[in-house]
Length: 497
Image (cartoon, rainbow, N blue to C red):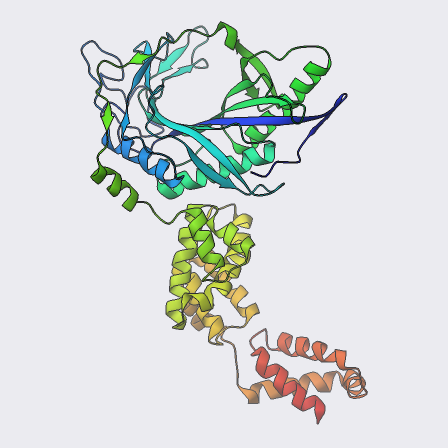
């Protein structure tokens, strides 16, 4: 494992930051973990609540097979140990948003054991982060304090929703590494389809454990900052909390083990409760649930259902397809981008009648520069692109067969963005086809040379660099429709006569 060079410079020297993340990821499923209630986001408060979720007397939980399947698939995606025998425990505490008075979780025997995730931070070297475990648990409800001047309301829509708690080892040493880890984990979850990774809607959130130490010393006392809901905020919380701890220690204070909250408006953490005063959760096996026992057929089906994952896809893009590491990284960072590129690549190869490896570079360059640039300008995501992968492949085909020059292709692309029309229709209706008619090109060249007789004399006198000027003037006169190769060839002949 490569160590980070990130350090905090304190009054007494350098300090190293030690970071671990506990990520709560909502499992993709139509129903909750132990009931048939809907998991749809955005429903009216308390619309998605069954008698089980509300903890009515006599209601018994029944495990949702799909939730278990998705957690197992996630474990397999990070090469983790899958425990064929696991058990649910009750975590007992009393809070207004927890109707049962306990949360069903897994403490002693989790579904998924140790695994790893490889990261490449923007600052620093590639590194492998250890995963300690993934356990499945139910979410609590939500308290709302802004609906009434003197009362707090409770929304139980989230109560009983299935979560994966993905616990890393304390292997990260900088905010950049933590950010890279979260982005990579979110990408894997989206590829697998086990969580949508939408941190803004709360379906993925992180508890951030931070401690500091002098390099080489034992681990210091850590704090836990709860429920941070964006990659940027996680990085900011780490930076602030690490600096706070260094300042505290160097001023003679002591870091206490406590739970903290991050204020994104002020960029600071503040104390929520002390771990020393934490409740005894009195864990014990849930008496209403039998242990989970997974058979080989179930595990085989889970493994067979996994898609090509980001690291494997990136290796294929860099290897057989011959893309640069940068392009491969951009195209595989998000599953929607990867799917769009795959569709674009297939259509481009089909239109041109060539292997995908022969068209991959042109397709990736167009997507990363032209399409991404346009989407950024329009404030759209690739899933909202006005241009489809099939239309992109057709546009690249018109460039490859000489129908469009590069500049004409950009014009056609802009019209595609506005109208949604196919490129062939735009070319036909607007007369944007590139011309290779040597007669027409020769006529324009003659006019350009006649209008610039002084520069023709200079060129023929040895000023070869003027050739680019004549090319530009000719292409301008032809509104970009002249075939560049033919224009260059005919100009050379005309100037050398």
